[in-house]
Length: 337
Image (cartoon, rainbow, N blue to C red):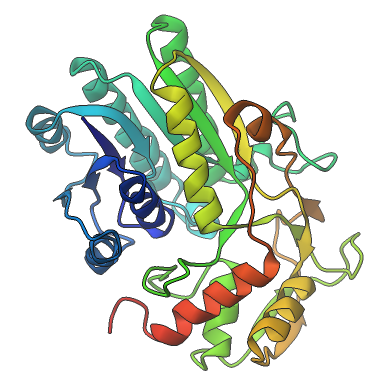
């Protein structure tokens, strides 16, 4: 029996594939490589010292998806595949709705057809929108403020309705906060196609000399230093959260939602200072205007994941900064060496 990982060549997907293999699972990976590189999976295979099946297909291609299910004995699905840029989703909302929602419908219909009813879905803290209070629990009102976040909420709703219609499904909805860092080997990490949308890969590109300076969006937030506060979680901790969710999903039925974060909020300046202290690299920065929709602070209450999944993030800010720098230093051009 294999675990199917959609979007497995991506940043979080590749780290989760490695953790699955290290834990003794067999995996099958699907990725259309639109925002990822095949080299990431070559390195996963190298680190795990084992091979696995890979299909370069798009989930929008239902016929190709059925081939994967017909050729493999799949026990459960971890569903990462999807477009993920907030800014891009605002510019091309129809593209995001079609890609993220339709591909998930295709996946669920195909799973149902082949009797595979165990799923872990890659959701996002974006579903909360403007948080009224922190730390954010899973019961916080859901009001995403961009199309990307709305696609995640729509899919969560679809999966809830699916379970209501058929109680033999077992589904975990995992709401990630801000994944950062890289594998400690420095062999796999985050490799954005273009200008990074996220803070940590931008910092690492400044550190390596690919970019002159960091733009800090706003310094008048209601926080301890005026810059936005977020919950940053090491990608390896996040990957291990999926294994814990899998252990819950496989023997049971039901649907449940879990925050995956550290429960600690760091500001933009905290992250910059932490990076400089850990790596001895100077990060020049300038303040610029706020971005629309950015909020003062957002960090997770992870009590539920600890109690029900037995999962807690173990890596700290220093680990996140050190591993990000090691990845960037070893791979100045990402996977395009």
